[in-house]
Amino acid sequence: MPQVPAENAAVPRSHPRAADVAGWWGRLHGFGPVIGLVLLCIAGTLLNSNFATYDNVMNVLTRTAFIGIIAVGMCFVIISGGIDLSVGSMAALIAGSVILFMNAMAPLLGSPIAAVAAGMLLAVVLGAVFGLVHGLLITKGRIEPFIVTLGTLGIFRAYLTYFSNGGAITLENDLSDIYSPVYYANLLGVPIPVWVFLLVALLGGVILNRTAYGRYVQAIGSNEQVAQYAAVDVHRIKIITYMLLGVCVGIATLLYVPRLGSASPTTGLLWELEAIAAVIVGGTVLKGGAGSITGTVVGAILLSVISNILNLSSIISVYLNAAVQGFVIIAVAFMQRGRR
Image 1 (tube, rainbow, N blue to C red):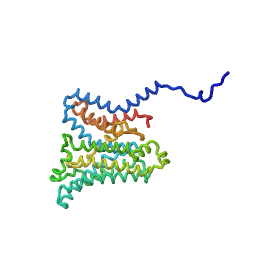
Image 2: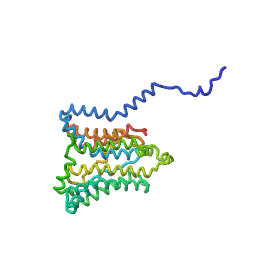
Image 3: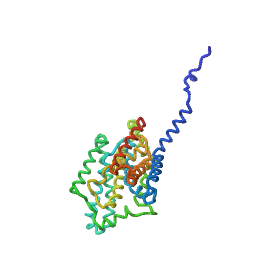
Image 4: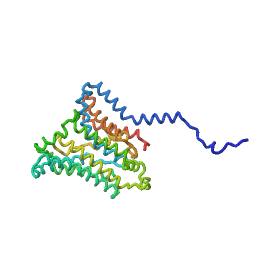
């Protein structure tokens, strides 16, 4: 009786139909946030005709800009396998410090414009420094990111409360008049914060997908030990990643300060929840290793649209917006089980 060659017997049977189904499902999953955003926009238009107006669209995008900019930095951190719970408190402390700095420097410099420019630069520098501290504590101090940022969450907000004596820190009127166009001015009919958000997102996408640093971030999130064996300087990459998030927080804060011209202990409250939710809803894997800036941007806009629809339609109380975002995070994390 003829023998079947071993190499022929070992060839597994292919299942092209199953492979096609898996491929289509993967593509559909990737477009999930976009599909959800489109469906929400349709629902919002049906519930309230004012939803689709140009003014409301610009209002939604402007309110998205602050969280969206922070979410771009948070995307890098989560892809690397980390987390930062302190971004809202960090933004509050940066806002208070910048306002105090501008008020103090205006008489010394003799130019309100110079004081405003110096304060804007200070916001970015402070964000980078706070991110550097986080990175050093996590890498050199070998403390879990959750613990480090949970601790600084309380520290940052406590210092702002101390500086403000439990009240508000207010920008001087002449400085506020000079600074306000950073938030209220338009370029080609689009508010300045939206343009900045777009620029930060584009730069983030290029850095993540077109640079060696971006590949290292994804490699560390996928398997940190393998990345070390591949001669990746894991500590340096993680420190840069937290500094990048800090810079994004600084940029978002310098855009936010002229909106109200003040900072209080409630400034930036729950921003960390919204930023993390935007990243997760955008398809970034919570365990690290995979994610996209485009998905993060869509996730941030999607959450703002949900909030806007709730405000316009009064389906539920506006005080439950944070609860809705919390449910969204849990639901998306549940659907991501096993993904890496």
